[in-house]
Image (cartoon, rainbow, N blue to C red):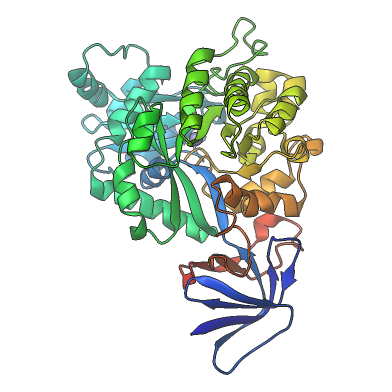
Length: 490
Ligand SMILES: [Zn+2]
Ligand SMILES: [Zn+2]
C-alpha cells in the first residue's frame, strides 16, 4: 500500500524544490507533489503542517568506540580530578573493562590527567582505559598495564600518559577484548543515539591501522541487524587486505599526523606555544604515494586523517599523483582537513579530493582565546575549519562528528557550521544542511539512492515539529519521527 504524507512542508535538498505531499511504497519514494493530494486507495497521513527533511548522514564516526564508551564513563562535564574519579567509579564495567572518554585536561581545575595511582585507587583490579577527548593520548591503570606487558614485554609503558604507538596499542588492546555481543551492543547504542538525532546513515571506521580490521567482516555480514545504515571503512594500511574484505574503500583515521591537542598534528611552521615543535608526520611521503597509488589503481576510495598543513600537503600530493597518472572519480577523502592554505584548497579542487570535516572542532576549540589560538596563534587559527572557502572552491564538502570525539549529533554539526568563529568561513543554513544530506550521499557515490527527497530514492527522511529553515538557532530543531527505507525507526 502507498503511504501518503500530506499537509506538510518537504524540503527536498534537491534543486531548492519544496513539496507538500509525498508518497512512499515499501522502501521507496514514488511520488512528490506541490499539491495537498490524497487518494482513497492510499494510507493518508495528515502531518498537520509539520516539516520533512532527508535523513541525516554522518560521514565520519568511530561508532564502535563511541557506542562502547557511551556505555561507560563520559567525562565531558567534569571540572576537577575529583569529578573525573567519581564519574569513573560509578561507571559500569563492560566485559570486565572500564572505558572513560571525553577527558580534556584543559577543562579541569588541575590542568592535568589523573595519575595512575589515582586510577588504581578507584579500580585496583579491573583494567581501565581513559582516553583524551581527541583520542590521541590516554592513561591506563596498573592492572591494564600488567596485562599488556604480559602480552608484549617489549612495550614501553613507563610514562603516565601514553601517546603515539603506545596510545594506539592500549586502545587496541582494550577493543580487541570486546566480544561479539559487546560489539553488537556498541553499534546498537550508536544507532540509538544517532537515530534520536535524525541520522539514517553513518559512515564508520573499523580497525586499528596496524593491519588489523578488527570486526569489519562481522559487521559487513551483519548490517541488517541495525535499524540504520552503516557505511564501513576498513581502517587499515593494507590495500590488499581491504580488497580481500570486499571493501569499496580503505582508510579512515589512518594517521598522517596526530592532533593539535597533543601537539602532534604536522605543521609547516612550529607550534605557537612550542617553538621547536613542528608536530609529527607518522609516515614518509613515499609511503603515502605508494599506498594511495595501489588503492587508486584498484578502484578503492581512500580516506586519511590529516589535521595540520604539513600532513594535508603529504596526502594531497599523493592524491594528485594518483589522479594525474590515472584520472578517476573516486572522491578520495582528506579527513578533518583542519589547517589549510589557499593554495592547498585550490589543488584539492583540481585533484577531485573531498573534505570530510568536523564543524564541532571549531565550536569546541576555535575562536579568539580558544585552544587553537593558544597552540597555533591567531593567523593560523583563522585558517582552520575553512568550510566556506572549501565549498566555494567547488570541493565536495561533508560533515562528520568523529564520534566518539564529539557527539553523534548532526544538529550540533549544522549549528557549528553556521557559526564558525571566523565568520568568513561560516556557511548559510542550506549549505550547512547539505553537508549532512546530499553532499554526504555523494561522498560514498550514493547520490542516486540517498541524501535528498526525490522520486526513486530510498525513503529515508525525518519529520520535524518546527521549520528547519526558519528557526533562529538550528539547535532548537525538534525531530519527532525518523524513517529509514520507509520504516519508522523513531
Ligand atoms: Zn576519526
Ligand atoms: Zn582522525
